Image (tube, rainbow over all chains, first blue to last red):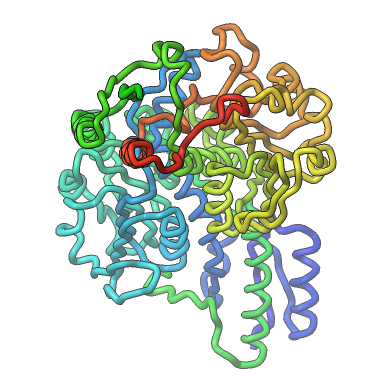
Length: 276
Length: 276
């Protein structure tokens, strides 16, 4: 049995590393702390993830949802020019309807927060279409074309798999109402960025907030940067910059290491074929 | 008995006006729709308000709280330059602590939403210090100097009265920790803007979001516009630009008109001496 374990170390404090070293010592493993560019070297290991990004990504989604509904891209420009104009009609999370593409950990954390702020209806879409209490209705992804025309805010929280690449293509963007907003916190490949920018600039879509893009970094001269009513962030929604995320990540890694040492199933095991 | 009623008409649709006309007709009053600059002419009327801004102001507070905690003033600048840097440590509403100055309708709506997103502790301050279930603890305003040094996010939602003018003065701003953020959605007169800008620029305060200023509009050359980590909005948090606010406002006005006609107490009667 290979007794080496590799842990992605970005943002880990010495206290986090000490906790991992202690768990490794107790279970008879040798820890190696590595960086993202060494990920390929570990391609034959068992891979686990911590599914711990729900809190930080959901807070990001609530923030950009409110920024879009409350016209902040426009108000930020007004204020930048030291202007004082405040009559833009705004919308609300309360009594509003949401479509969430992806009903996993992230989609559920988003749904819980929207519910807490009075959302009227939250529809989920997933591979299986299996119901979940966080959503009023869940449909299989195959129902997407039926759901898009009655979508007000579309939150995309999908993993990158062959099935999700350009799932929101040009034709589907055209199915959205002109007052709809699109938020993507999953993977940049999930939507057609060129078609999205065109829809925004021509007023066929009200706004968008993208935290993930294809490629990353987005090229300096990409037209997406300056599309109308777009909020871009450089992949910040789910990284390890929130202390809670780091703490939980380390706690769940150590728990799975104990599981592995005891021969129990791993809570965070990734199916490398399925892609998540 | 004077049978004239005056209603502030900005943002009212014809459907809203029809509803008011119908209620007035039924109760034997003559409605007059007026603008804000005619407010002085009505200074001898009974004055009611609708206390209906809680939803829209609370959504604004959640938005700017997340923008400050998630470093959006800095990320907006990075993205404006088409940059890609994403390592700023962020903070969360979950597990965080909040101090809300003002435990009325607005403060309670804010507290409910922060609670729903996992806030660890919500302290309220009010004139009376009377407990309310939306808050973990409520203190009288006289305890402010004790509460400020352990405040992480200060939300100010106070009416404009002689007691609240510059309640957050230079000395009290200095009592806040350097990682604290200040959010003001009450009245601009409640804080010393010059001292706030200096505290932000010198790093003695982490960030601020002001939706109200003194005076409004803020003068073009005011240093507040370009203070570090500030989010200014031109008094948009609680105006009538959200449909829900308008609908509720009309509904409550009509209910109070029926109360008045029937000789019942008015739900929204303003005490002109107290100021709210």
